[in-house]
Image 1 (tube, helix red, strand yellow):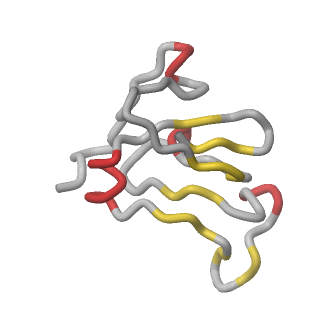
Image 2 (image 1 turned 90 degrees about the vertical axis):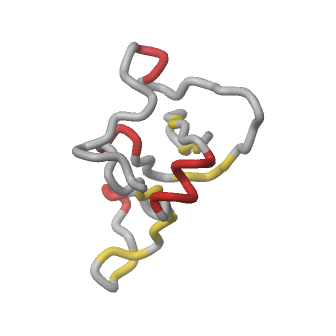
Length: 87
């Protein structure tokens, strides 16, 4: 589970994180990440819709149980791929 400073959270399976090369961005186009884009660190989740990318990440929690993130608690799908899922 990725937790943001504003209370937002999103979940990703460990399998997806490994396959899709999920990463934490500190810069954008070689410049320090602007606040409106998630400074100091933003989660980048390739192939997923924007609500699975978290801004202002301050904590990462690895658990054995499945937890729902902010939008998943409101009925959004937990693994919303744009196109085909990563291999």
